[in-house]
Amino acid sequence: MHSIFSRINNVSAFLSSCMMALLAAIALSSFVFTADPHGDLAISSIKVVSSNARRYPNKKQDLAFVHFNVTADLTPLFHWNTKQLFLYLEAEYTNKQGVKNDVVIWDRIVRRKEDAVINFAGKNKYMFRDISSTFKNSPPASYSLKYNVMPYVGLLTYGEAARTTEAVAFPPTQSRL
Image (tube, rainbow, N blue to C red; front, side, top):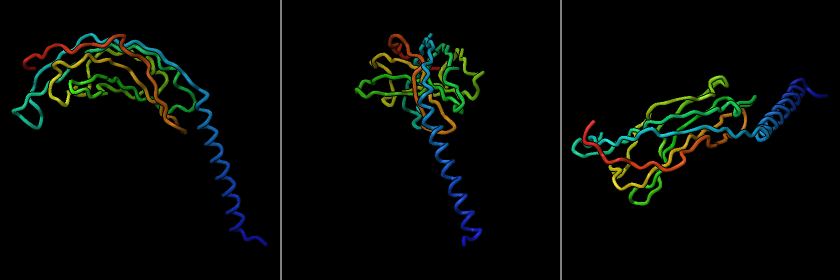
């Protein structure tokens, strides 16, 4: 009555439906595992230097070099559905035109639970400059260590592990590197 092809089609449709239900259950169960990691973030020094702009050699551009210390225990974020963590240090400030800026100045990928205890002291990995070409008269910036949990199955979740207690002002510009 039923051919072999229709039976194979029925079995594969049933198995794919079961697989989708299992993946949906895994994705929904990730919301049960909520962790709140804590860390410390300290800005040790900021140096603002005037340099030539990349595309316009006759135009000056201010570059900020931020030295920071990060300590954080992110092991509570790892569970059976965590593939990796993406950490990033973000500077939040408002420039003199009143535009709010969020700039990523450092990042790291953590793939294993054993590497999730962060104790790092260094400077920004990426160039930190303002579109107005100067940090003069800019309000102080606040810095935060944020994370992104990348699961095997399900939605990405974002969070914040540490934040500076008070905003840090930009120092006066130095002449050259």
